[in-house]
Length: 243
Image (cartoon, rainbow, N blue to C red; front, side, top):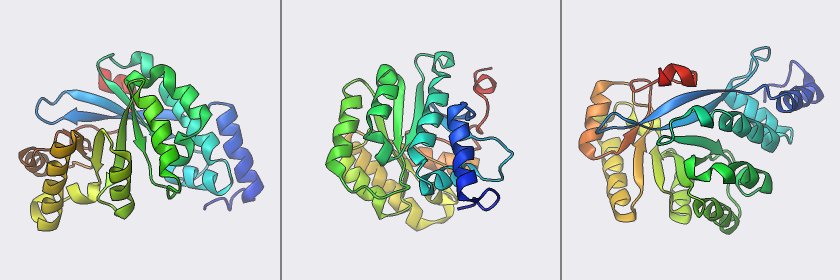
């Protein structure tokens, strides 16, 4: 945790100020249908005031360490939802949420009115102790039209447990599988296996971290449905993507 500039109390106060004054900004990265090159969804990514030299990950990690993780996540989600009216109605908005926040009433109340437009990407910052509660919470939003995605699949065993227990609508392959896939038989084999899994379960497969045409072309040949990465579109303001 990088709270040394403020000390713990100062860092906690800074995070609370950001939440209370809606100082979270949102940038968007497109998720593309690889066959048609159409935008399937925009993933909302948070950006924070630059007076603190924390990365986005460090903002969230520090907030969790100080007991403010849920508040900061919910502030980021509110900021992202504020842009939904500007996103074309046929295009989804993907928002990131931890299992701990996904089961809260606050998250349900925020997401429920817009559930039919949302992809809820479950993150893995903390272990899931009670899958039944998470499944119930996500099913409530699924019944309202939300789709569930598992992020960073292939990065560890927790992702595989998520897939088996949560039966996601979308499986997002970790960039460690995508990078250099044309050179690595292990990544190639695992990606092919995930395509087969998706076919059996009805899930969509999306590859993260596509940075070269060679990666894109091989992923298409392997049957990957959707993709995301700098080669397809960098994170940026929503109007930059729409224009």
